[in-house]
Length: 377
Image 1 (tube, rainbow, N blue to C red):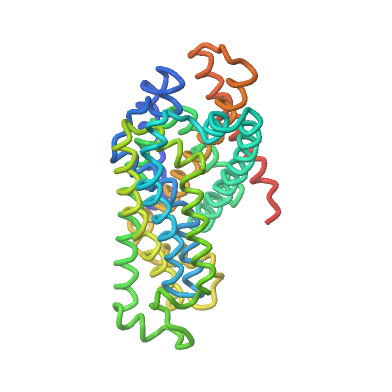
Image 2 (cartoon, helix red, strand yellow):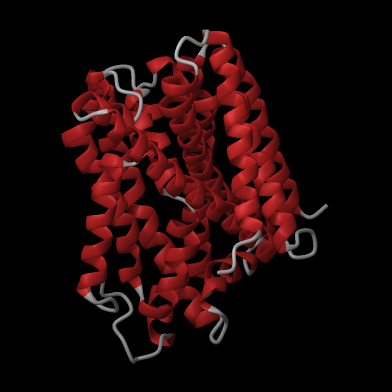
């Protein structure tokens, strides 16, 4: 067994061990399963929003853009950090104080039942599609970095088993506790790889001297039209306040203060990752000229020491897992809370409702995997 595969397997084993531990809490009822019993402290809120934000797009995708435009690609994560910061300052505490469960729940409180149905269906469709993209990203990461072991579809299937399994077993408790490991692993992998990759090319001075002279690679305000960067900030700030994932994390906080602090701390954790991954994309431009930009980060990682590359491979997959689990849980919550419990069986018992939530997560996971296998682009 290669070192890289061993590290990935060890990481998966640890995630499932954490999930089985979390199951004891999640089994106490639907509130424990969907909202961690509303007991998340600031640290768990922070790692949850960081895990949601830092996915494949925030690592592999940022490096892909940086391969072509330079350090400015890191603004993608900066936009996410801005969204988490605004959520913390403006809305997270209020969501927790309202004891809300979903955005559609609030729509019905302040508008009408039709508003709840329309928003629930719309958000559910969006989240199912986004979840399916996480399977595609997981398949791409595993097949690119361990091609002798995983095909693209094999990587997708493996990712789906892990994503669905973790979420199914422990709900938000499982996601929250797992994200402590995932965020630590992401930081270890990215920081260690960045240091090792810079050292491998001879240091920053040597890196700068070998880059094409056609653009200012390290200017964070060059490379992209400002309209794109502004668009990222607009999208990320608005979705951080209204999407089910961030709202569910805020509603799972211990109190309003924990929700606010957690999102503000999360913003600080999200911000640096984008620019570090952008630096890895720039290094790929020097070390692997002519490759497909999508392979920028995988190419740099697999060119490093096996232990370093194994940790970073697990970190990139961890980023995908942490995002997928929270989004999948959010999709299940929208159906079970806003459709099934509200309209199909309002008087359902707590035990039965917990079972319905788990079945919903499983069905959503299967549907999104089917989406992923049939994606055309």
